[in-house]
Image (tube, rainbow, N blue to C red):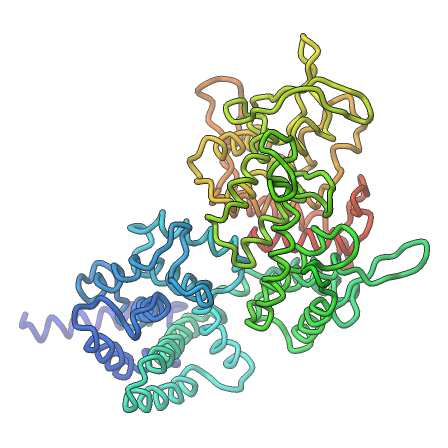
Length: 584
């Protein structure tokens, strides 16, 4: 058989396979703009023949070009050698110790997003540890939704779904703009339009395969939308209200948490009306900031940190001054030397409700999350000092140096740390009860919500996943894994104690496990040393549990214990949506 005949024969086989009944694939768009993309990449590489940089050599530009190269029709990868290797090395030269990329604080979030996308598409296995560290940094800075690259692809898919445009039309406009930018020698514009063109290519591939989005629908469930719709009924122009015997009043903290929960819906999926509610609420929040940088009058730490999280999620430059003032306020209420505390004090490193109030793990985890989301670098001394308090709250004798006489419910008791790896509420105190030892000393019991809060805060403060403190906390979580209750309460306490703070528990569970990079939970199945543990996909399990508890109107409510304001549908629904945000 001649060479030509062989090709014809193979072509016939391929054509037949492609048109088997039920398997016909009709491509509407095919591969678009190959020439334009190739020419743009060649031009950018020509500007840096050593392959060590693209554009201005920043992490932002290098990350954007590598992302485009990885997703374009040629699917470049690290294994392609000098075409990509030099740029990947140059990207790593801008990597910071905390997992972020770039040297410009103003663009660090965008630079890190693009670096994350670039490393993921270039070779996710080769750079798995680096990608995971960068993912944790992004999570810690409120970047839990769609990446800038995904938003660009979503924009094309959205326009196609609405019928207002399609990949071919949008790409044609980008191609014209790209040609102009190349003529003018504007490398920044060339990079931006290159990414837009490749986004059109990616969207075309998705649509040709019968898809509709690049993943947004998978990350936003019907259950989440029902909860979102319910929350919209709890607000007016983005402001949420609390009901008291004296009437119905707007509440800054609840409004901020509500807006954070509403922003868990990817921006590309929000309607104009939904976005308008969020924008109005954020504007109102800004107006409530006090001269000292705090927000609201009561529970100042909770309210201020909630507002910081809501503003940081929006990612707008105009919110930066308010975030910086709030950041200074939160740093100013940490119980450290500037406030007269010594390292030997039980409260050292903690943050409480505000003012001179005692600290606890719950207040501290909100504060550390808000500080990171507002851009505070991980090497700031506030995090190292917070670790002192965290360790004294963890039942891990190797790191917990706190013991002695403390007051509990007005009575003096002698406390000492346990060694199960979980966490109490604060050093020497646990609302879950105590374990009494033969010598009369008491161990504050570890319980679910505070152990997850501990794990989350350790991770945000820069503790590595393989650190013994993290491993011990994860060990407690696996030994006490449940979604039916907030585990850890003493058996002699009232049954409803097991359900207090249940939806708060769901929220910190999702945040902590996602933050720490835990993918599955290894649940013990027996006492035998060789017993195989049960591997649990915690994200799927959490989604299933919350779907089971959701009411017909889309809300959630703690019907077993309304303590800590979980007797209201709005707050429970907020917690549930924030939990689902990390369970995608």
